[in-house]
Amino acid sequence: MLHTFFRRTWIVSGSLAPVSLAIGMAFLLLSKDRSQAPPPLRFDRARMYDGGLGGGAPRPYVVSDDLRQKYSPTRRVEFHVACSKDTSIFLLASGVQILTPTGWQMLSEEYRGEIWRLKSGVAREVCVERPEAAIWRAYLRYGTEMKGVPLIKAQLREAWLSRSDSNWTGKAWGGGRWTGANELFSDEFTK
Image (cartoon, rainbow, N blue to C red):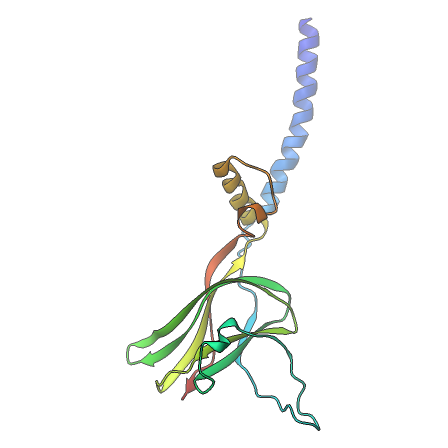
């Protein structure tokens, strides 16, 4: 009987060792420091396109900004945000900074709180109100989508805190996870 017990213990521990080793190696390989750099985004002032017959340049695909109607057409300035590959960002805010003798100061900021699924070849429009200041620029504050080990850690922590593991895609906990405090600035403009 004692012989059978040791044999079963050996079989169980012999089976658990390779499984534990495989899980440990997977976490070790996944946990290498892979900092999540912000995606390569472009933030340019929108160009005017000739809409007349005989054609100018074709108008690119642009998703209009919800704030377009907020600003007067005479004071509104449109920008396009584009990317070279499909990516997702959480747009926290957009705004305008002015150059002062002490450096760049925020003049206005609009809270956005929007998830943008950016597609290559499709620009997102961002509208701001042009200030009276001599030198100004527009900016965006955003976070990037978590992936890999940081995402797994965040989901495990949330599952532990909520005592629920009902959905491992992240959608049960708010539609994804976002990280970082990234800023994107336009070129500088005068008037």
